Image (cartoon, rainbow, N blue to C red; front, side):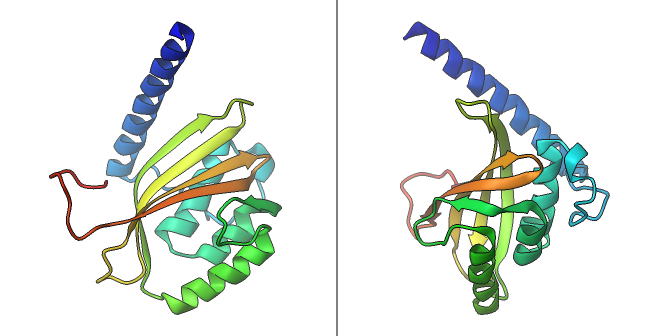
Length: 173
């Protein structure tokens, strides 16, 4: 029990420092890549953070969902969202239709957390405010990706609609 508490504290400290680092870079604009974020020619030499940064630039910041998937998601992509198909190409079809139905959608990234799972595989969590249209209250979303060999290979998500009334003065972000 004591060992778990120590491990949990270590993870919390590491996440805090990662968040502080991401926030500092986000303020000065340094978190966005200076290269073409769809350029995969150097995929083999990129770190997992560089891969995720390029994907996030295209997918979340530029709102080019299909381009982000084509460039950075592995063909054998594993999807855990029960409302989405597994596999990159099947997901691209769903994303293309989603973009067509919601041309004004936005993904306002609030924080990014990097870590590892129990098998020491790289994970990245993206917490953002998703809106289908500017007037939409939207949802708080966390996408979790597993990255391997220069590709996003697996995905989980948690989606929580933003309510009209709240019981506290805190925001969801």
